[in-house]
Length: 179
Image 1 (spheres, one colour):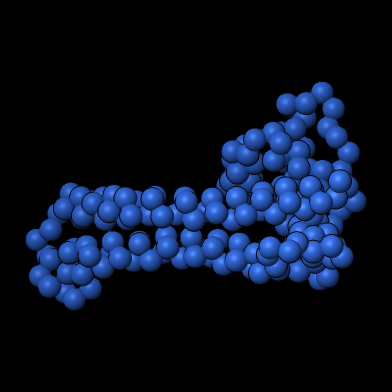
Image 2 (cartoon, rainbow, N blue to C red):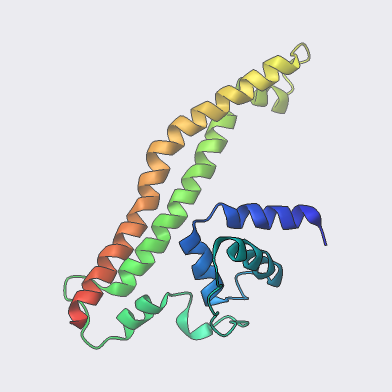
């Protein structure tokens, strides 16, 4: 087994809080997580807990009927008493599009920083950059990284927050109608 893969999986799981780890363990979704992941996660949880909770039956095939929706989202769409002020399917679609747009923004700003980097453009167009040293190259890419970060941070994080807020509001509204 590739030791680097084990370390990468371990580090990824360690970066998650205990609640996320337990959720992954409990759901036992083998379509999303590998057997190796569950083996490593079992070791992590055994060090943190006196007893490891039971797992759901393993999910080994993608469920075509739910189209990637979470259980509460599917219940909301199947409910007879639909919300009056919004169409749930449109909001769920908007949530996915905003997530996609946030990721696209990162790529766009990185490309923009590289295009505006004189060194990259000089290398691309072979404009006599032979006299540059490694320090100049590192400095140029460092400036581009900072430029991209300054542009990405104020846009990316608010965009990533919007789908989470939409989900919370929809779930609150859905749960309030059930009572």
